[in-house]
Length: 317
Ligand code: FAD
Image (cartoon, rainbow, N blue to C red; front, top):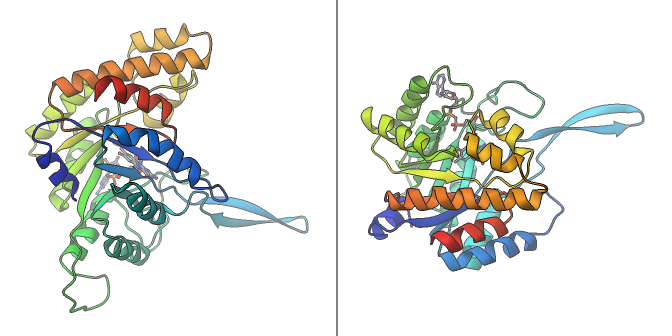
C-alpha cells in the first residue's frame, strides 16, 4: 500500500516507521531480521531500506595498486523483498542518482514493480567518500527532481528509450528528502525550499525530513513549506544520539544545530551507555511533542540497531 494511503487509513493516528541499512556484504541478513523483529510490535506500516554510494578500493596487483569501484552494502531491492515477505510489511527502497545510470535505475524500478513494491524514496545521494562534491554519474540523474520525473514517466508507461505498448504500468508513490535546517550545499534555506517544491511539482507524494533535534526547526520548516505551496505530508525523521562523538559528527555531516541543553547533557555523561540514555530520553520528548501536534508518521533512523528505537517506541506508541 502507498505511504499516502497508510496515512489516510490511520484516521489521524500517528504511525511509527523506521529506516534500516543493508548489511555489509559477506554478512548474514539474520542480524538485520533480529533487529527488525522487536520493532514489529509497534506496527510499522512501512520500513525504509537505504542505498549506499559505491566506493573506491585499491587492489594489490604485484605491488601496483589498481583502483576499483565496489559497493559495500548492495542488495537494497532484494532486502526490501525479503523483509516484505518475512514480516508482511511494506518496504521502501531508497533509489539514488549517484552511481547509477538512468537505465540501471529503470531496471531497478521494474524489479520493484514486479515485487509488488509500490513506494520508493527518490534521492540524489551524497558525494563519494573521496570526493568533495557530488558528481553526477554519466547518463545518470543529476538531482532528485530529475529522478522523480523519471519515476513519474515510468508511472505513465514512458520508458527511457523504448516505445513500449504494455498495459502493466507502475504506480509508485514517491518520497523525497527535506531539510528543516537546509541541505548543506544549498546557498540558503529559501532556495533549498524552492528546490523541494520542484521535487513535489515533479510528482513527489510525500517528504521525509533529515534528522533534527529541536522540534521548532521542524514546525518552522513545515510552515515555510506550506507557505510556498508544498502541500504533501512532511514526515519528521528522528535519530537518537548514541555516542559522544555524535556531538561533532552530526553537525559536521548534516550541517545541523544541536540544542545547548542536549549538548550539555551529553557532555556530562561518563560513558556511551549514559549518552544512549540521554539520546533516548531526548527523542522520547521530541516524539511526544510531535505526536501531540498530530504529525501523521514519526520516522526513526535506526542505523541497523533496534534497542534504542524500541525504548523510544515503548514510551510513545
Ligand atoms: P536534491 O534534492 O537533488 O538536492 C541536492 C542539493 O542540490 C540541495 O542543496 C538542493 O538545494 C540543490 N538542488 C536541487 N535541485 C537543484 C537544481 N536544479 N539546480 C541547482 N541546485 C539544485 N543518501 C544516500 O546515499 N542513500 C540513502 O539511502 C539516503 N537516504 C536518505 C533519506 C532521507 C530521509 C534523507 C533526508 C536523506 C537521505 N540520504 C541518503 C542523503 C541524501 O542523499 C543527501 O542529503 C544528498 O546530499 C541530497 O539528496 P537530495 O535527494 O535531497 O538531493
